[in-house]
Image 1 (cartoon, helix red, strand yellow):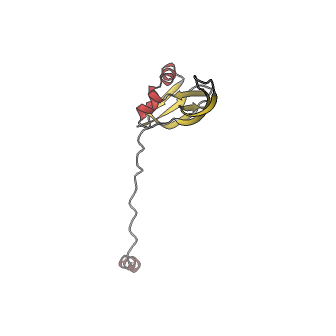
Image 2 (cartoon, helix red, strand yellow; image 1 turned 90 degrees about the horizontal axis):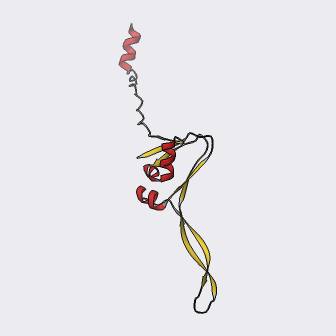
Image 3 (cartoon, helix red, strand yellow; image 1 turned 180 degrees about the vertical axis):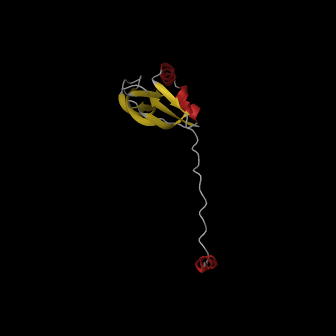
Length: 122
């Protein structure tokens, strides 16, 4: 089920969504992969050479001042920083209410030729 978070403060807030808490709880990974270049040293010869390594970078949730962000997975509430902000009143959790379907009024059927003739005879 999706929820909405409202920032109740007049400043921007950023929360890192850790992989072990958010991604595993939501069932899908929100992390991105970034290529990091490091120096790899051979202990025998002392030779150094660049090596590219793929690292996962956790996603982040950014809420602008007084912003409400909808459609978030409930797993965001498992992140300790978000829990702390909700308990402290900096964030408010909103659950969407099901929208009522508008009632449709039946449209009257157009008059048939017989009805029109009967109305004009009067």
